[in-house]
Image (tube, rainbow, N blue to C red; front, side, top):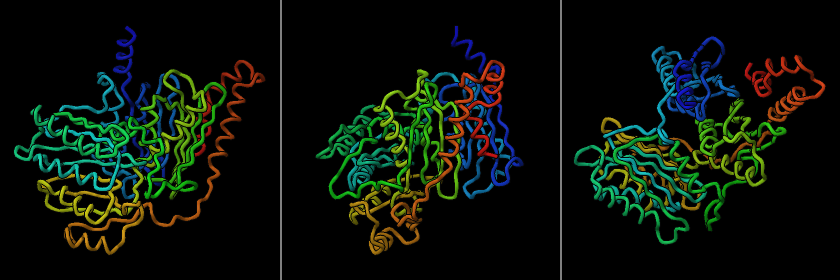
Length: 464
């Protein structure tokens, strides 16, 4: 009965989305009001990031039964969203995502599709791994139509969408699917894998690729450090995310983070918190030219804040991993050419033969054209010799393969400590003490709590 009542409330109180280009001088402001439910924050952020919008500021409040969020967003060029059709589409997508949707039994973005077969891979990373996977798929007449590959902390994960080369459709034959799974598992295990390799196939099916990658990496415990001889270690110190946790009495755990800003950073963080079964009740996001500052008031789904040192350490490690997985390490190479069966196998083989290590890759095809981006280093994790890149470009074609940009390995400017975090944290703690002080009596306390909910009080100051 309670479940049916909750469904009725959600149907009656559909989400309200207001998109305003006049409220802020340099960004489009999107306000979302809705009945609160677990995961709604991630759903809204997912819509915005899927539209390639950058969230420059955000004010999050979802205490009680209502969800009220304000996002400042810009397009990929840093401009406001002016196109009326795009604005209407964003509004419809958010209203659909945040509104009442029948239960999907815990699945993530699973929708029927006859277009392709989805393959999920997880295993120990090593030079040439992607080349071996692509060679197997090509030999089995599987055409890779799109894929995303992440590596982090000696682990690799991929979500690959393939079609049968002869039909152009999803592969549904159980015997053939079993063969694909068996051969890919053999490749992933290698000769010295310390963990069990995993291959999951669904035919047909589609999911939100990036969220699945986070879940695969998290399940594979990539947040646990693995030392490997001859491999460039992750740098410690100022270049890494700075994360602190603080409990405010028994009400919230406050997570404060500062890190290098990049696209989809907020999505990655909220995705991880959601999958770890934490609820963001209040929060603030502010981005500068290079740095992002984020602060969240969270509790576990059981209503309790973080209660042990072991849990605190685990949350910090998982958030660091979430930030680092998508960080574009290495030289970005962009391939644009006619698509064909075995193209990806040939390209990755050339990379392997020239001792390149693929740290991350985004594969896509459209209208018979392949447009792929590879982030590469040498096998020790250091920058690639420009002469090797020139040689590879000559083999593949100077017009087909070009250098996009160098990321992550260049010398970094001196780190500047932000003063924003401690300042607003101090305000938050002071206001919390006022609200809960024994000297604040009756109606005065009620009025203060009503008009100035703790986290909203200081986050609103920043967004003005």
